[in-house]
Length: 209
Image (tube, rainbow, N blue to C red; front, side, top):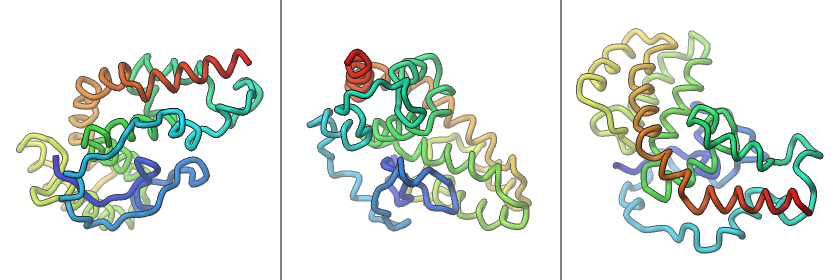
C-alpha cells in the first residue's frame, strides 16, 4: 500500500474538504497532503501501552462512571455492537477512530480514509463536486496517488471517467470495492485484535464499578 498524506482524526482526521469529524473527540496534529510516502516504512510503536492509549482516547475509563449515565460516554454495549457488522462499526464515530488506528497499525489506513472521504463527498453541494472529486481522485485513485487504494484496473478507469462529469455517486463503485475489502480482510482481524478486545474488557470492567 502506498502511504500518504491525508490527515484524519486520530487515525486520523481527514482534511475539512473531505470529512467533517467531531473535533473534540477526534483530534490530532495535521499532516501535509503530500507527506513523504517513506514515512510509512517506519514501524510505529502501536499497542505498547494499550491502557494509556485508551485513557487518552476515552478519558472516562478511569473515572468509575457507568456508561449509561451519559450519552457522551462510550458503553460496552456499543463496542459489542461493533462486532455485529462492519456497517455498525463505521456508523459509530469512535468506532471509525478505533478501527482506523488498527488499520494504521497494518499500514492500510488509506482504506478507511477513502471510505470516509466518499461518505462526505456524497453530501457535497453540486457546485463543489468537481473540485472535491478531483482532490479525492488524486489522493486515492490515480495510479500515482500517494495513498493509492487497492482497486482493480477496470474500477480505476471507470472512476476516472465518472469524475469528468461528477455526480454524488461518482465514487460509489470504488467505495464498494474498498468496503468489501475491509469487510472480508481487515475487519475480522480487528475483532480479534488487542485494541478491540482490551477496549471492550476495560469498558465492561468500568461498568461494574
